[in-house]
Image 1 (tube, rainbow, N blue to C red):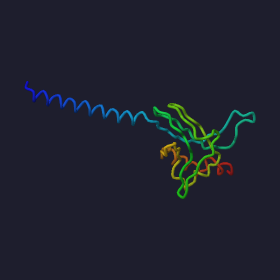
Image 2: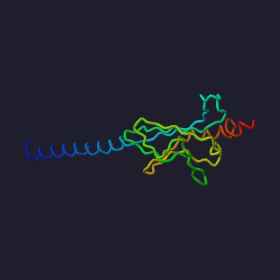
Image 3: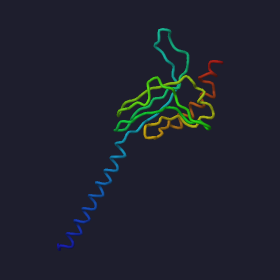
Image 4: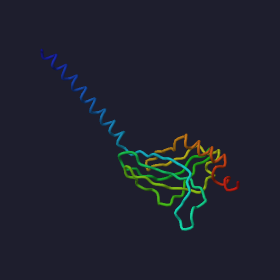
Length: 155
């Protein structure tokens, strides 16, 4: 082989290796950042000496599924006209380490009315993490059907 062929092969090899290295760095940075999974469901509190609390609660489960810590600053949601925040039992902001979660709840189920657009958690850099649309749709439909909340109590 002559010098030009060797130089061309080495240049191509260097370009491929450096492109792979840069691509891997971007991929790693995207994969290794913190990510939150937010889910909501309706629950009742049990275990008190008085027995089961008959109140239904909208429960937020916020889990850090990423590989870096995430600072959780708010949980709440978005209505057609305004946003709302849930007053939490544990003070926020709160740092969630990888794999760590927090459970918060509210007894005000009126947010599940027809004006609700989404339920969310917000981190310290302003990223909005949403409850899956399917979950929100089911919660709204069940609330409208009177399965829980004020309408259940009045039945």
